[in-house]
Amino acid sequence: MAHESGFGLNTDILETNLINIVLLIGLLVFAFADSVRTNLKNRQDKICETLDNAANKLIVANFRYKDSVEFLEKLRKQALELQKEKIQELRKTRDISFSQFEPYVSEEIEAVKSLVFGGARSFDRELINNIFSLYDKHQTEPKLMGQNSNTNESKSFRKSSGQRRW
Image (cartoon, rainbow, N blue to C red; front, side, top):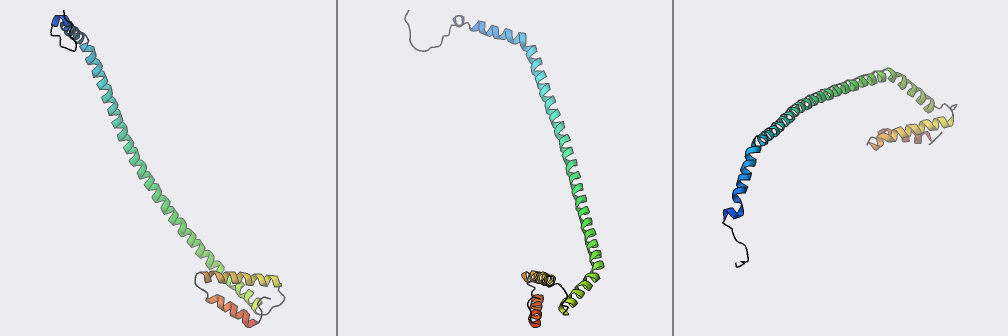
């Protein structure tokens, strides 16, 4: 026999055992078809059940999220309302306190002015200098904001009195 080189197709069915292979595959399919079907059906059921559970959990999570957002919005509104009430209460308290003490503060300021500007020499010199420095500091603050009319008055008063400090 001559030996051929290369590839070729063997068409002899008996020599290639094609019948045996087909019979073996058919027997395996027939024998294990029911168990494969039940395993695939069980796997499909588990996957569907898992997807249903995930969908239900998503729905529940969305409801909880919506409830949380509504609750948070309600808390935010309550906090803003409480903050407004506290601000109004503080303003009212400030106005009441200011109106209560304004006459006393005005009287004290007038008394200090009359003593200092009236020529009373019995005061401690350092105390008077401190009062003037505080007054100057108070007068320079509005100057920074563009209000310097009071500062000019205090300087002209000191110059007219002839002394810069006591």
